[in-house]
Structures are given as structure tokens and as C-alpha cells.
Length: 390
Image 1 (cartoon, one colour):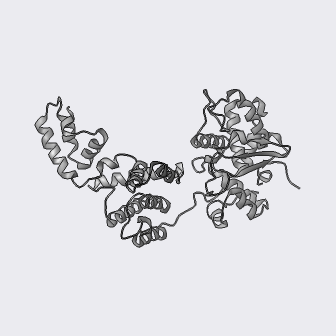
Image 2 (cartoon, rainbow, N blue to C red):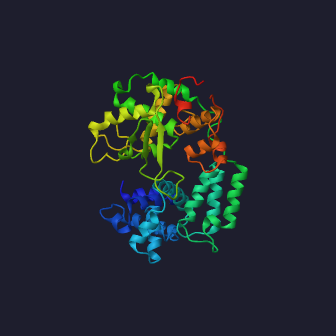
């Protein structure tokens, strides 16, 4: 079957035809070369061009959202260094989230014959309402609102996200589908800590098990996010008689100013579950595998060539360890270590101010709403030291 016949068959649905055009950049001239269906090709293209005439921005939207943002800045006369500085104002995780939301928006527009870069406020409202109708959470709809606000032109003098109608729609989504915490209860960290202690001497563990153990104990003791575990600066790791100190390679999730934060983990009485002793063993075990490509990150791959790892890998390590310890990982993710640890901290009598500082929460309401759960009775020692306290 020639390209033209495939295009003709696909164009029974205009959207599918357009997707083929976008994906393969087929043009009438390209399509007719060596094609056994030249007349059919011309008829199909006339049909497709009539249907897609309003999509003036279709070539622009086939590229990523970030490039569209750069082009918008350049049109305003900004220099390339200034454009890159403005783009760097958003973190990589935010850009990735917005890119995914942009693809959802662009696809929805193509299905309805709209130009994603030049549309109406009513169409934006319909899109957001459609997300709500599809059962998307308030936070997901809000991400799409933010992405559109930072990508599309203003409507009636307002950024998309600040327009009164958009704000009203989001309020409606919130009221009808109130955000719910992911977990209604928490797991007992002692179960996982006891499992880690039962693995044996750190020096005798294979690198894979030692990596998993280090990630889990660090997550419980430090309360940092999984993405932050993956960005621990190896060269900043400093041991002392009382514990270990380190910084991250990037700002913490809620940090928008000031220097990179230093994090301290105290030593514990029981070596088998002490995160400091485990980190020491991990540093020793990975020393032969360190080189110029992985010298900056604490955690490296367990397999050759032992490259730096991503937060997804760290998440997998923690999730695997939780599952082996008997935690239901179909319910609890790697991120649940923050809630499990802090819930037990609170039950053990740790002050709420100390918990908020350790978890890097600006407001107690955030902790209460998303992390505080019923748990058995730390910041490092209350959770990680299984020795009964008197």
C-alpha cells in the first residue's frame, strides 16, 4: 500500500490523517514521488487541506512546548542569553510536567480542528471542563491551567490562569472533586528498619542490596524527596563522630532562594540500622567504581559502567525494599517514607516545629493534610533505632 492510499484510508477520520501528516511530514510533492496513486493523492490532499486550513500553527505545535516558549520570547526581541535565562527560571521537573500537559492540550485541539497556539477563551474553558469530566483530579487540571497560562497569549488582558472565568472553573472543580490525600493510613517504619537490620553486616552485602538499604534508611532519616536522594552531592558528604553531613546538587523542592541546604543525619546506637554507618559502607563499596562521570552524585548504578542514576531508579530501590519487608507497594509508593517517618515522629513526641523544619514544610496544614497519618510510635533515632527508649 502506497503512502497516498494509507493517507486516504486514514483520512476517514480527519484527526488520524492530520496525525500522519504531523508525524511523517508528508507533503503532496513528497507523497506523489514513486506513488502509484497520484490522482488519489491529489484528491486526498485537497480534502485534508480544506479540513486543516484553520490550523495555521500546526507546524509550530509539532515541536515541543519549550521551543514554542523560546520562540515567543525571541519575537519580543529578547536576546538568546536572556531567553535561556528566562527558561532556566523553571526547574526541569516543572518543564517536563508542562510538556506532558502541552501534548494533551495539542492532541485535544487537533481532534477538534483547532490551532493550539491561537484559540479562544471558550475553547480553553471547554478543555479544562473536559479534563474534569474525564475524572482528572483538581491538581491535574491546575497543572494544565498553569501550562496554558505560561504558553498562550493573554485573554481580555489576563493570563489564562488568572482570568476570572478560568479561576471560577477551577473553584468549581475543587468544590465538586475535593483533593484527597493519597493515603488514609501509614505503615510502621519499624517493620522496614528491622528487615534492614536483618540483612547482615553492611560490608558483606552485595552492592545492589547495600544500595537499596542506603536509600531506604536515608529516606526515613532525612525526610527528603526521592528526587533529592538522587541529587545528593557525593563530594559534600562529610563524616564526623556524631553523624554525616551533605548537601544536594540542586535546591530542595520548596526552596526558591538562598544557598543549597545542608542536611545532617545523626549516628545511631545500632550499626545494623544506622544510616551513617550504611552510607560509610556504601561510599567504600562504590569507591572502585568512581570516575569523572559519576563523581558528583552519591548514588550510582549497581551495574557497569556505574553511571549516575535518576530518581526513578532510587524510587524503584525503595519500593522493592518496602515490598520485601512486607509493605503493600500497590498502595504505598517510595514517597510514602516521608509520611511514615513523620507520623511516627509525631507519635514519639517530636515537636511539630522540628518535623516541619526537617521535612522542609512551610505550613503545618500541608503536613496535617497530606502526611500526618495514624501510625505506631526520630527525626532519626525515634524511627530508626529499634532499641526501646526509657
